[in-house]
Length: 171
Image (cartoon, rainbow, N blue to C red; front, side, top):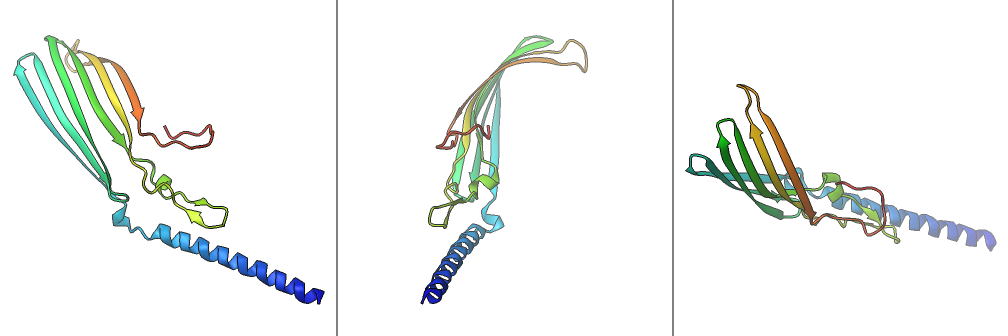
């Protein structure tokens, strides 16, 4: 009869809702599978200073980091040169490749698919990287005083972006 058919339809809708909840719970459990110690970042830096003559100093370095969460790493070289013009002034140049991980919640962002399940597409995101260039002038006019002027340029690459138009940016 009509009442039996309505009850069967209601039961079907209820069962579909339970299935979607189970899928959601599976997605929640999958997101929780990573333990705290699987989410850390290891960083290291090494530097070498070389002074071939009294007025010229070179600083060479390398910065590395490893994100355990998705086994991504970056290695960024650094170079600095300082030339002393006179007792109170010097010019300097610097270059480096710098890397930055995304905010942690971005890696765990889950998007709901049309079938009601959840997808975690950001777990494999790498580091945002940039070239940094610096030109500076240091002046020490008095004891315990220092004036520094710097021109700085940054060029970003490997920046994750949305595939849809948005006014939001993490940069």
